[in-house]
Amino acid sequence: MIAIMHETAGRTLVVKATESLTSQDYEKVFIPQLNQLIGKFGKIRVGFYLAENFTGWELGAAWDDAVFGIQHRHDFEKVAVVSDKKWMEWATKIGSYFIDGQIATCTPAEFEDAVTWTKQ
Image (tube, rainbow, N blue to C red; front, side):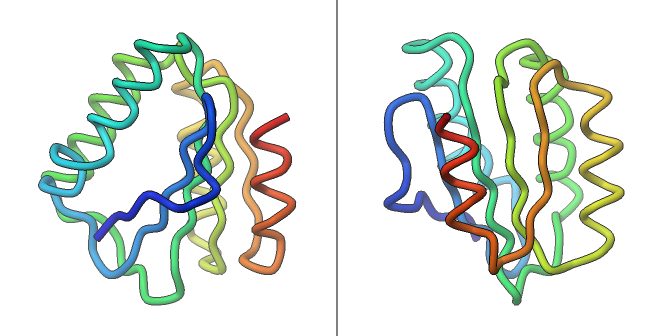
């Protein structure tokens, strides 16, 4: 499941992912929000908080994520991925090759710093 967090403001979208992300999460919540911000601001910033109970992406959601990311690779100014999962560090590093913006990974204890960095 994906939820918009209250830290969202201006060109910065902050979301929290729990359990398993589905195509519905992307098609009904995440992608519409991203499209709205891109339409309004051009380049956007994203904070992606992966909760402790986050287990990953269902295949359809992973596909939606990859397609959107590639189509909009020039539209991301900053992306902060907050997670305590080690595998997210290498996944984020791989993802950084597909977008133009800056990408950072942080631990949950660094969440506030990650949001601040993303908004600057």
